[in-house]
Image (tube, rainbow, N blue to C red):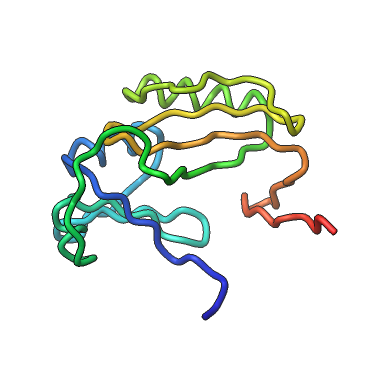
Length: 142
């Protein structure tokens, strides 16, 4: 198996609401039948109704409550970028669950949740420099 992720799909309660939230952050999606696809660098980010996603996976849907055990993250180029993304998320209706602050690793980060409770970290990490296209390469920790 290749070490690669091609798509991340979030199960959402209300597809139009979820699409509007992400588009208010500046993302541009394309709806295909009952899903919305966003190009996110070298992978696709997909919104699909949570019941349909559960059926596709073949698992019973568990009602949302609390942390789901998954966090999505977007690294940015500066502390100011963290503040700007968090401000945009707040304006879009996100719940800011951890305001921007200095981190133990010498960076600056915050967390918000989207309208369906999916956690997003927005982080500036000087140890993880971004390429011109925004891609991240994990440094050699050896």
